Length: 536
Image (cartoon, rainbow, N blue to C red; front, top):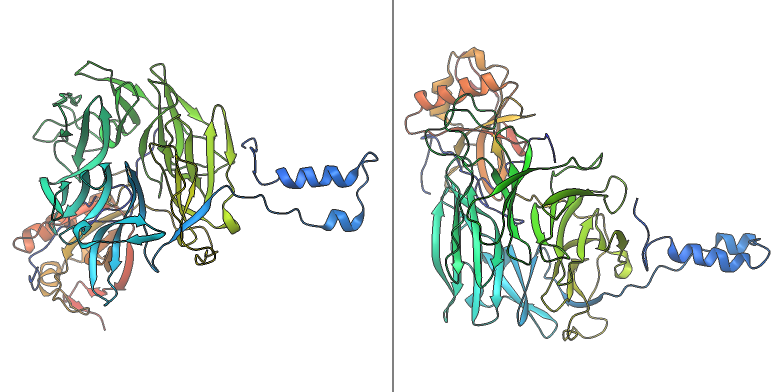
C-alpha cells in the first residue's frame, strides 16, 4: 500500500459496484444526443495429516494402498439457504431483521431489465419486491444499514452520464425516498459514531470531499487540507480550490467512535487520517508496506471495526491493523494471497475472501473455513448477531447467528463449481491520469443510446485531420457497465495532455478527460490522421 498509485479500469465511468461509484463520463459534442498461514480447524491439509498419522500406526509405516487413498474433504459448517437467480451477481447486506442483497443486473421473469434492486431472503428464496427497486439508470448500491422493514438507509452511486452522483435513500411506505444527491461525489464509506450514521463522500475525479450525517445528531469532523500553494498527487499546479490532503478510498470507525479515512496523500503515498472521539481535527499516519506479491488491484478497500474498542481492520488487497494509534501490516491468509473483500464479526473476527477461499482471523492466526463442495466464495458479510453469510456457487450460505434461517427444501439448491470468481473492483471508476500512470487513456466521447455500433465520429475526425503527431495513439471504442466510449490509449502523459486540449478546442462543447485505466475494447477505430477518414 505504501508508495503505490492506485490503478483501476474504467470500471464505472457511468456506474459503481463493490463498494463503490462512477467517475465522470466525459462527452464530446460529436453525434446524436438522445441521452503462510497456520491451518485452523477444517483447513486444507489438517484432515490429510491426521489420516496419514493414523495409517502409520505405532511403526510409522504407511501401506502403499493406504498412502494413495485421498483424505476426505473437510466438513463445512456452512449451510446453503437459498439459490441465487441465474446470472445475478449479488452483494450481501445483513441488517437487523433480514438478509438483504443488492444487484445491478436484475432481469424480471418477462425479460425486462430493471437495473439496480435490493432483494430480501425469505423462506429459502431471494425476493426482489418492486418496493425495493432503486430508481434511475446506472445506480449501484454501496451499502444498506438499519432495520428491516421500517428503518433503512441506503447509499449508492449513480451517474448523470458525465459524472458520478453520491446518493442517499431512506425506505418509505412506497419505496426508496431520496434524501441526498451530490454530483461529482461518491461514498467512500459509512461509519457508526455513537447514535449517528456518518458518511464520507469523495470526488469521483476532482472536487472537494465532505462529510454527511445520514441519521442521528450531526457529527462535525474537519478534513485535513493540502498546502494551498503546492501541487498534489503528481499535478503540475495546485487546484483552484481547497484540496484534501488525503484522497479517501475508504472510511469507517472503531467501536469506540474513532473515525478513520484511508487513502492516498499528496505525495502519492498511502496514509491514514484519524479522528479520535471528541476531536474535530485529525492526525495523519503513514501506512506500512504490504507483503510482497499483494496488491489492491480488483480488491475492495474497506475499514472495519477490530477486536478492541479502539481497533480497526483496513483491507486493501492486504490487511492492516490499527491498534493503539499505530498501524501494523498483517500477514496474508496464504503466501502472496490478495484479499478481495472482507467483513468483521461483532467480536472482531475478520472474515476474508482470497482467491475464492474463505478465511477467518481471530487472535493472531488465519484459519481457512471450508465451503460445501469446494465452491468459490464471491462475497462475505457478517450480521450483528454473528451470522456469517457467503455468496458462493450460485447460492447464499450461512453459518452461526442467533437462529438458523429458514432455508430451501433439502436437495433443491444446486451448488455450481467453477474457477475463482473475477475480482470485483473496490472503486468502479478510474484514477485521474498522470505521469506515473502505467496506461493513460483519453476518454473522448460517451455514446448516446441511439448511436449506432459503427458510428464513425465525424467531428472528432475533423478535429484530428492533419494532426499526425497523434499517430502513436490507439483509438478504440470501449465498453464499461453497458456504456460505450470513444477513447485513445496514449504512450505518454505529454501526448495525452495534447490530445485532450486538441479535442477541447476542436470539438465544440466537448469535455475529454485523461484517466488511468485499461478498459474492455469493443473495436478498433483505425484513423488516417492525414485525411481524417476511417481506414477500411
